Length: 449
Ligand SMILES: Nc1ncnc2c1ncn2[C@@H]1O[C@H](COP(=O)(O)OP(=O)(O)OP(=O)(O)O)[C@@H](O)[C@H]1O
Ligand SMILES: [Mg+2]
Image (cartoon, rainbow, N blue to C red):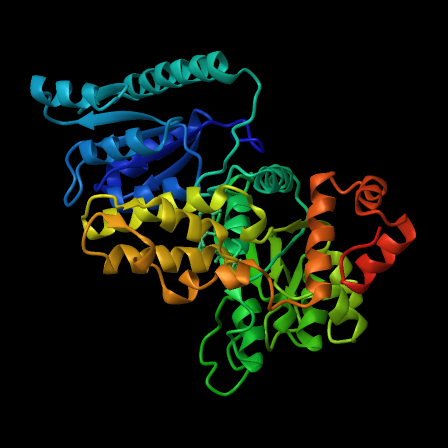
């Protein structure tokens, strides 16, 4: 865990802002990386994104109590400890807390020393347990990211490496493969985790507004600019900006982005004075940027600037057993949202799900599972409960509606990935020579080097 920074991460949850600030200040001064939340719901959202070592929570909070938060942590996060702060020490409360796996609790009022020694104690136990469990072995998954396939394990590895480096990252992959999730994972596993992650969809903001949205504007810059306003780059200072659909920007905007990447300078609209920002850029696209460069609609220099670290999200159909892991994950999630028991899937339904081509990838799978969980009355989901387009996908499995070149390209790619991209091995298996393989890869727009 915490590959990029050695600091231990503590999340403090309390509905009283004063207490929250006090604890945050003390722990930060003692060298911990501290996150805060004013309620359990906010805490749970944070825990989905950030690997946290210790949660310190108030027992009594409106809506969801500290005990419920502790239960959530115990059931969902094996590698996170919980410490409770309570104003009412009762035997009953203590027993319940300990049963829920709360490591320790302190009672109000407490001194700074009491707080720090409790935190140190818990984290020592946690460290000892981690060492005993898996020595130096890395965990296979990242927070909130489901996947045990070879392809996804490689992606997790790349995300960890990218998180530790300061460079710009370009994330590619089909629609719905988890590009935004990957960008978030990079941010939250990086030393910038405590600063903002600011996602922007470049395609959804009209061209004439994009510049002032990104860089801000000064008073009087244009009609209606009655006040100076900061842009997303200033908001993201110290953190990460996620430029989604980067290919949807105009050539003029691309030139401005290049300047930020080259020297960290932005110009607010209407100002001639450069301002410096410290922002890591992660960009994503589901287009082939190289092809766009060739067609002169994407600047080559910007492409090379963005392309320092590239992560390609594999399509879901190339992730082996992950489909069924994801089905189970989303079934649990949506059943919980509806307050229903987790449904079971009949073998036939699982076969259909596993064999489907998933053109919309994880997003499509998430929608399908949500729909069947909502629509199915009983707790068993069978083939007739699945969307009709999927039930009749047996024909698709036979691939009779696909071009020969598509099938060939896919086969070549899967052989390549099976041999770790070793072109010589792949050519041998495919029964062609390396030159033919290279030509085919070029023709299919796959990297040939
Ligand atoms: N491996 C995964 N485990 C769990 N959830 C996932 C995974 N991959 C994607 N998701 C979920 O699937 C949905 C789509 O993911 P995301 O928005 O990151 O994809 P995308 O590649 O950015 O898609 P698009 O190209 O359409 O913008 C999100 O709800 C995300 O949380
Ligand atoms: Mg996206």
